[in-house]
Amino acid sequence: MSLSTYILMDFWRNLRNFANSFFIIVLPAVLFLIFGVSTDWNEFPLPSGHGNVSAHTLVGIAVYGAATATTSLAGSAAVELQQGWGRQLALTAMPHSVFILAKSVIALGMAILPVLVINLVGLFTVTEMDTSRWFATAALTVVASLPFALYGLLAGLAFRSDAAVGAASGVLVILGFMGNNFFPLDGILLDIGRFTPMYGVTALARYPLNEGEIPTSGDGIIGTDPLWMILLNVAVWSAVFAVGCYLLRRRSTARR
Amino acid sequence: MNTQRTESRAEYDDAAPAVTVREVIRTFPSGDGGRVRAVDSVNLSFAKGEVTAILGPNGAGKTTLIDMILGLNHPESGSIEVLGTTPKKAAQAGKVGALLQTGGLLLDLTVKETVQIIAALHKNHLPVDEVMATAGLHSIASRTVGKCSGGQQQRLRFALALLPQPELIILDEPTAGMDVAARHEFWDRMRDTAATGTTILFATHYLEEAEQFARRTVLMHSGTVIADGPTDEVRQQAGAAHVTVTWAASPSDIQRLPHVLHHEVRGSTITFRTDHADELARHLLTQTEAHGITVRPASLEEAFMQLTAAQTDKEPTR
View 1 (cartoon, rainbow over the protein chains, first blue to last red):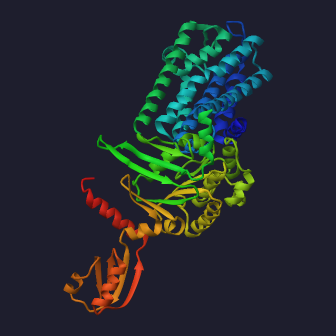
View 2: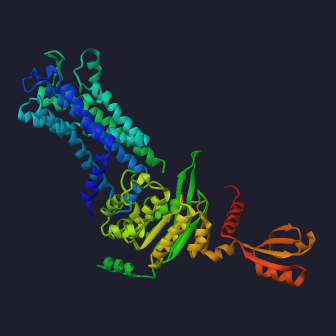
């Protein structure tokens, strides 16, 4: 049995899927070039002093890209299993737990790609960040994408179709907007945004950069999120997605 | 030490059956809140090297039974043994190859990649090229699965079933969606596989496939086995033969005949369906004016309809 062959072939299958790689890698990279590189204010330093505005945008868009990757891969894994590929795999030497492990490696690999690409684009253009904080934000960006694997799984389990998983990935644009990922929110949108699922993970990934401070589109900050509030958002949404997956799973086994 | 010895004995014991199904029951929820018995107290045993057809209409319980033999589903009560071990272990060890009914393929892989990716997950497998040659896939190796016809996808599933060099091959309606030519070609390939001594079990509702390919036929209806034996005998068991004679008979003449299940008068010829062709023929030729006799065995389809009708009559509540 060669698990690495399986992982590499399945990874390559997902990567060459144009819709997949466009939304996971190309679109976020282009968004970053538009919002994080080409505008004038990107070279302004952040109030925290650890980097510039471009760095702030970079992390937000990288989180969006990585979350799209885990959403679509976890979702399509659930759909694959329910559409009979799981039966085919059950007749091989690979146990179900190893399938989950293999898919996790593949999803993580796909999540790392946009993070890598966008960070490199930033590095070679205008983004400035302290080196150690840069690595910390990049690592946290990958971590930030993990709850969205549960979100994708939820969509896959609930609707059992690739179209539904695609729609769930599409919804991430709205969640990203409300999560303060693309450009700085303020007022009522920010107040609502704080309770949406992408806000917490994005604030967490940005934490090494701005320590919870929320910059406005001008210079200055409009508030600071305490770490516990950020972690609470991440924990609550992870739990919501996990419980949803558990309930759907139970529904589908109860039918048998 | 003790268990090890018995295990190795089981493995080399050719007399042991390949599959044993004992008192297996499996139910599913029905729409109205109750439960339907998809497989109801089934007992079956398949010898090594045997080729068996499982026949039955949709909903007879064929796929449920096959899923349990493959370890994809579990009996609620009763037990199943496959090649001296549990269904799950036999499948994971690559002793069982299966051609599953629907789905089971990733549409964006190519044909060759599909064989490669499944090969990577078996402990031991035949060379990918060899399997692809056997299944006739070389000409479409680089085609994506989504662009393959139904017959081509079935050939690919067949290749996947052959990969682990299984001792038992299970086919769930293998020729569904194939045209006549593809079906013939498929069974020719299967015949080669059967010649190597592989145990083959296939579900079908193409009756001629059972007649041509399986020496043994198991007939299922509403989750139970209603007939089981050599395919020829199953046909006879249903009392299925047609006797045609030329005879100007009155209705009372026909009433007096033995072993007649049904008759049809067409001009001067009468066709009888009988459960005992010899007795009826003897009676017709010796006791009546009938002449020009022909006897034709009924098709398995007729046998099947008769047996399932009998089953429904016996238990009208179900």
